[in-house]
Image 1: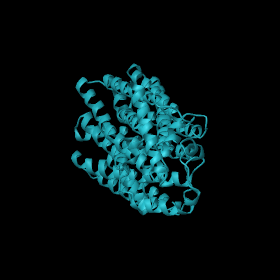
Image 2: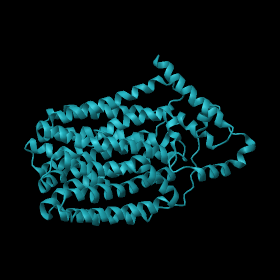
Image 3: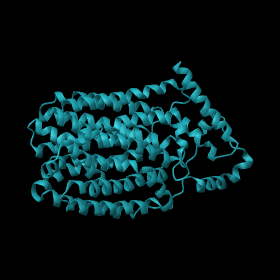
Image 4: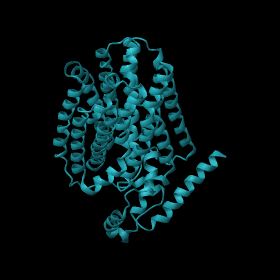
Length: 440
């Protein structure tokens, strides 16, 4: 619901430009900052979810959404909208989004990838629904009443959050094959003390857990994801305005968001299921999704008709859905349960910086050159660069078929016994040494 509203900002984009007489760049900042904040505050919201429960944090986020959308409907100065829309709605979306993913990690173990795919399908379904509805509301009620209808719909998020069950025990453990491969074993006499140690360490955790940055694969992937996030929302924000250049009416252009939503949703569900197959390398799925999205965006300026742009939206959305689903599975599975919030949160936080600058940068290029052509060339090239960065991972030795997700779990082995701490440090050290030697 709420992410569908954010993802459909492109339909409001030309209306707000006309209402406040602003440039593409300035108007794009409103939507991009809101989406970026939904990721940036994830580490802090993740800690709040652990302390106060995901249910309470989601309910608070829903209230922020209602207040932000209602306040935006009364704005007469675009400067104020940076607070009412970008800040309030961004924070509210972050609370709801982060808590939902953490709830999936708590509820599911064997089918976690499929469950994650179902959750990530939410924004796609929201965009599929809000795309045409937003245009109808704009035509019949105006943009102010459109925001009020959106605020009313977000009350459903509050009601759904009430159904969250905070009393769920996690049985997530480090895979046995990983523990054996890395020789990180429990001393039988310490088994009775594991729960006490876990609880003691959990109580001593800092607000931000920086230990995830000791995983080199995690660092490289976050760089790749950051480059991708700089570009992946450019089509969403500028698609309707670009359609105006092609003389495609706004009511027909709003259909593109339906295609984006249904194609992305299908990909997220399918890829989520595929990621549960043990023989499938999740990173390859992620890298392929980035490459296809980059090529499609690079060729978008060649699309000059409604049919060709619609074809682009289907291809781009499917590849983007594959990317984001596999990305979420990687971030949620690359560490153990005690560091899951940090890995997911830091990944989202760094991606948010790039996300915030992407659509405004594309708008700036379009303003200066009076065309979106070079903006899409730039976006497509950056996406391809993002996929190329992941080739650095080939410098690391493969330990299992799912080495990306499983091998990094050894970092969390220190949560199991004090004796494993030295071995874990040596494993990380040797991994970095292997990487540096491979570059020579």
